[in-house]
Length: 244
Ligand code: SAH
Image (cartoon, rainbow, N blue to C red; front, side, top):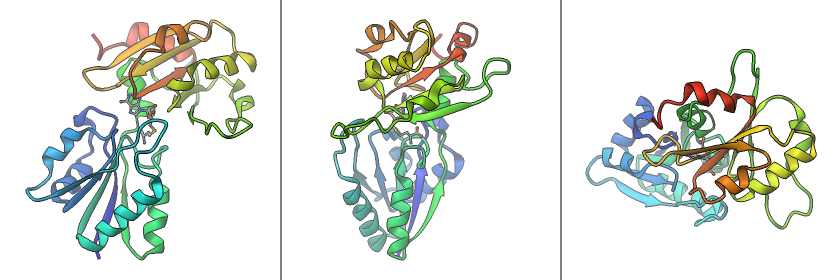
């Protein structure tokens, strides 16, 4: 039986792959990868390495998670070194925990290899620090995605009244709803917000606005994209570097 490496691929820029991730990619017998993992990483694999794409779109899954779990498990029965490569960090909305549990229940050894999460690195490339002395002392990373058939919101909006920076992943398709909710719980209409599309890649694009106008400005941006809410957004005027 093989060993599975539940590995973070970083947010997009291939140079943000960790040394440890690169090492297992180079040794892998099979690499099972996502849509959000930069496919250029596969060029680092050895000759004869098998590639299995189990791509996930933002809002719908090409392969249901149970099937992905099974693909990983079957690969571990067949190969010695299995790399499960996921965008960002495997445990930040990455379902790496579910994959680990599935493997543990079947007696397969695994390791997590942390990756640089888009939640921090993408704002950073856009010149937006998630914390900044004198501006905010904490940040939250939340999902903007909610299942359509749920009657009530699962997102605890009341918790977001604080001054925390809020980073929404998987939220572009609900941008309008998110800004409406934030205004409903009392944030001012001119509260700063940014949407960053394809962060850390040559296609990176950032749109800055207010809760009131961001939807019209940013709705056409391509995915993947994330949303940053908070006073830290204003620091981009002084800290923008990558898009220059
Ligand atoms: N495990 C990943 C997050 C998976 S959820 C991580 O740690 O980064 C997928 C969401 O991440 C996308 O919907 C988007 O909101 C965000 N995302 C991932 N890569 C991104 C990128 N390069 N630019 C902007 N957002 C990105």
